Amino acid sequence: EADLPEIEMGTLAEAYEAMQEIAASFDYDSMMFVFQSLEKYRIPQKEQEFFSQLKAAAKKPDWETVYKLLNEK
Image (cartoon, rainbow, N blue to C red; front, side, top):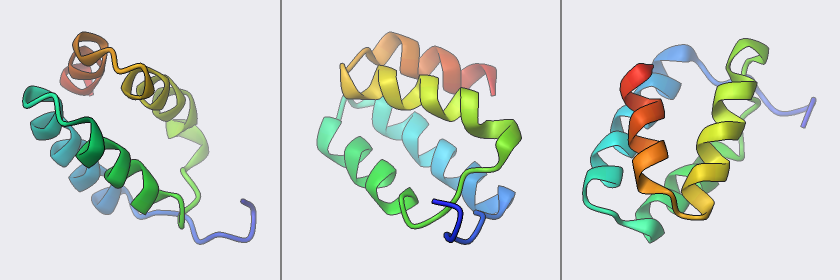
């Protein structure tokens, strides 16, 4: 993972925005697609804990937690 380019915060913010819309429609496949597209980047250190919580909730899927996390962002 260390050899991956770090994602720009603007790009990550756009991904979070897309995830918020996806969570509202309970679209598991689209949510996993967004996470998959982010795998080619390194998540900044300050975002890693949030990102891990978000990914864990999305994989269940626990839509309420996903939506709550993204709304607090």
